[in-house]
Image 1 (cartoon, rainbow, N blue to C red):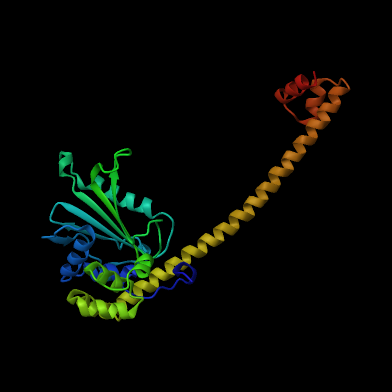
Image 2 (cartoon, rainbow, N blue to C red):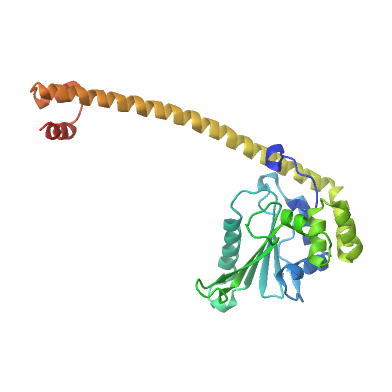
Length: 299
């Protein structure tokens, strides 16, 4: 049963509230730095969370759309990190939207295009999205015929599919694997190994334990769960109403079409009896243009 069906989601690290608060917290830059270096394969000297998530300032109206992490690395690149629990079949479009929005807002009036920062969009998914076997997809834009030639180098997308990771990885050999085991948090033995192998994962575990016991965190999660339930309820109600209204409109259209066909039959019969157009128009309610067409067809 999914979050959308129940409105409930466990407060584990892959829950976006926990994930974004854990990695955006001041003092946890080392954790975020290691995770990003493992994903985008770039040495990070400087890192800055652009918008730190503050639970106390969140409103219930904000639902769950303003918790994405935006990070500036080495002063010349922006990383967007999105945690997606449910498959809404729009992740590719969402990733493209995030990137284009950042590109559009990163250039000030009067600046040249070379001032645009590189963009990295990282989507960590709690479902399978691609037909590829690999659990971490690193995408680039290439020329159609010469696939080894990268055309646009300013934007890169990374899709990490947690279900594939769980199927494929049994031994945590890399730091990325250790972090993903912790983020997923379903295999407790793997989590234990990750904590033992990686001091930063151990640090993350301590912060995670604090966050899951924090009243403000749980309150925000309750608000978000309510928002999801309300949204699902409104959708279901709207769908039923739409079906009912559609049936009514369909019946009305069908009835009107039937009446019109009957009028046409009557008009044709009157034509066969050489009754004047003016009389037929008055009796059937059909306009002159329709009657002229019928007369031509009769001829």
